[in-house]
Image 1 (cartoon, one colour):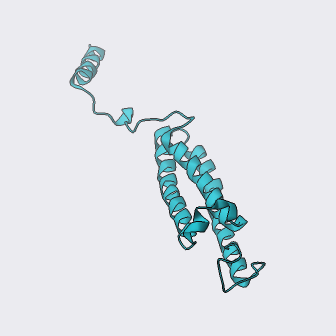
Image 2 (tube, rainbow, N blue to C red; image 1 turned 90 degrees about the vertical axis):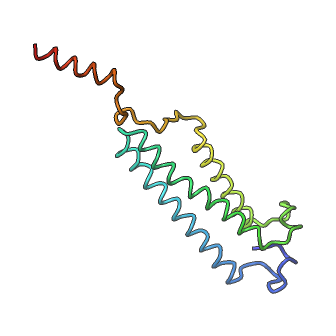
Image 3 (cartoon, rainbow, N blue to C red; image 1 turned 90 degrees about the horizontal axis):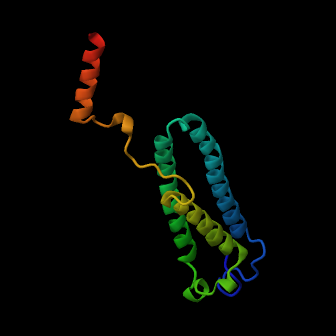
Length: 149
C-alpha cells in the first residue's frame, strides 16, 4: 500500500497477502457503492419523476452522507502515511492514488450536484401544501357562492 522504504515489515511490495486483501476489500466497497447508485437512481427517476422536489430531497439525502464518507475515506487513507509522503504525491502508489483520486473525484461530482451545478434547483417550498392566504380563501368562497346562484 505504501512505496518501498516506508514500511519496514514488507520490503518487496509485490503481492503480499495483506495488500491483496486490502485491495480486494476496497474494491468490493467501491463495487457496493456503485451498485447502490446504479440501482437507486433509475428507481428515483422512475418512481419520483412526477415529484421533482421529493426526488431532489431523496437524492440529496443519499449524496450528503456519501460526500462525508468520501472525506473520511481520504483522511483515513492519508492519516497513517508519513507526512513527507502525503505531501509528495509523485511517490504515491497506484493504490494510494486510487483511494485518494477516485474518491476525491466522486466527492467533487457529489458536491457539484448538491450545489446545483448544471441543473435546475427546486426550492423546498411545495406550492400544493402552502396555506392559502385570506384573499385566496375569500375568492374560493366567492366562487362557490357564485356557482350556487
